[in-house]
Every structure is written in structure tokens, then in C-alpha cells.
Length: 81
Image 1: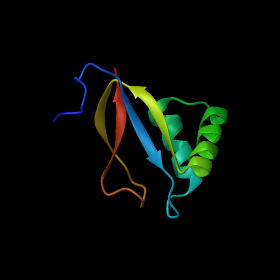
Image 2: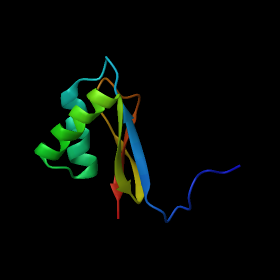
Image 3: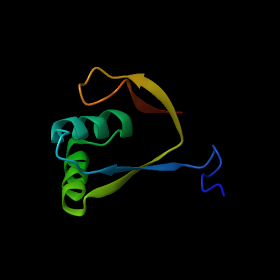
Image 4: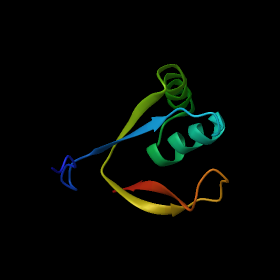
């Protein structure tokens, strides 16, 4: 069974709350990758903390983007047109 949509359908990324990742990192991710304003990113961060997760998007296509943050193994994923 394949629950993945076609590659042309927008995807939703779900961010889960954890105790290790700083809020500032998540807010920066929301701003850089999803183009959220500071206010939108802060509001979404509050929702993530309250509900333990929140969907971000939609995003159409992702491409790997090197990440130097210690909380990432190797890459972030950047939305592209």
C-alpha cells in the first residue's frame, strides 16, 4: 500500500516537539525553508509546544541543503519551485 501522493502534489511536513532542539532552530527552519514571517514562525512554534506537533507546508518539491547545526545529521530539506 502506498500512502504517498504523486510527486506533483503538495506535501505537509509534520514537526514534532522534543526536548533537545532549541526553539530558535525550529523558528529559523520555519522562516528559511517555509518562508514564514517571524510572527508566523513563533505562533507555529507555540502550537508545536502545546500540541506536541504541527503540520507545516504545503511544499511542492524538496532538495537537500547542507546544515551546519549540531542538531542535524547532514542536511535540511529546502523547498524549491
